Amino acid sequence: MIELTTSWAGPMAGCILADFGARVIKVEHPAGEVMRRQPHGIPGSDLMVQHETVNRNKQNVALDVRDPDDKAAFLKLCEQADVLIENFKPGTLAKWGLGYRDIAKVKPDIVYVSISGFGQFGPLSDRACYDPIAQNYCGWTSVAGEPGAGPLKAPTYLADDLAGLHAALGLLAALRHRDRTGEGQHVDVALTDCLLYTSNGNLTVGAYGLDLPKTGNQFLKAMPANTYPCADGHAYIATLLDTHWDAMAELIGRSDLSGLKLAERLERREELNGLLAGWCAPRPVDEVIAAFSARGLAVTRVNTYADVAAEPHIAARDMLQAVRLSDGVEAKLTGPSVKFSRTPTTIRHPAPPIGQHDPDLIGREKS
Image (cartoon, rainbow, N blue to C red; front, top):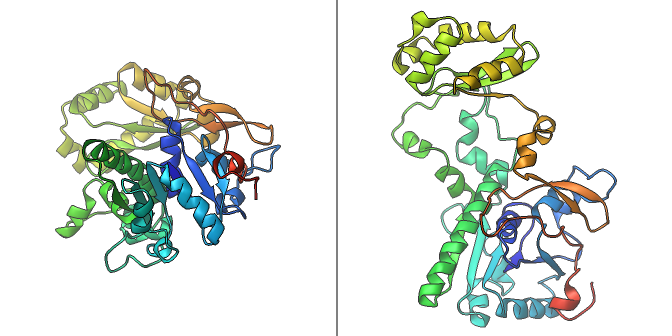
């Protein structure tokens, strides 16, 4: 698999497949891509967390595909590849003679995956787009945050992550088609499409002009479901089932409220939130969690990332894996999310330096 990408969405697609065991060759400009310079830096190292996270388990060659000699070397790599992933602005690679039709001439059954902001066609396909642009275009920021507040974007690369995930799924489906028919194809993945697809039907709600209010930490269709201050932090409590509400009412000493159905609870949202907040306020978070968990109710401490990094459950799930980086520093990197019973997923090797595999893959020393 060839990955001609930069930033996050494209490298994330390659990372997912590399974690699953695919051989992924990242083709990087000799000057290095943007994620090599994005904070945070890993303590004791000059390497960056985000770059090491999304480019592990890959090989790396340094090529400037606009240079004739490097372009020829790139095409040689493509001749042996099953998949090419790219996330340039639509039309850019075609201008350089490296579009889908160009690559299909040297590898007719290639699965060519293009990730972009607005897709390969449509009125906006030629617009520049980054993750926050996609979030705001799609309406996501209009429903995020507290009621009465302005638009709010996600604090992670949400659209990029989703596009990377959908690209990985799409290329697997395209490979399955190729296995059956021998046909390659062009797979078009847009950040905007992926974000809308995973917006819980809100695009359909919007098409009918139905209201989509901001709810902050609450849910429109569940009550109670909110963040509640405790004596030493915050707990998030979520109650979807009527039977869970009955157990909760008994727990907080309000058995008289047992039997309230969801519609009634939604109508009395402010009152019931106040009752639960009053019960939580004098108690430590651990006490609240223990009491709710003992009754099979959904609850968690509101953690920081530092908190969750120290959680025994995260250690048991191997979600932080110790990796010896290319400069010799050991770092804890976020591990693969999917667990297989037969083919365990691990970080087998760190993100390579630029051009580390040039001698093996393109027959010359590092640029």
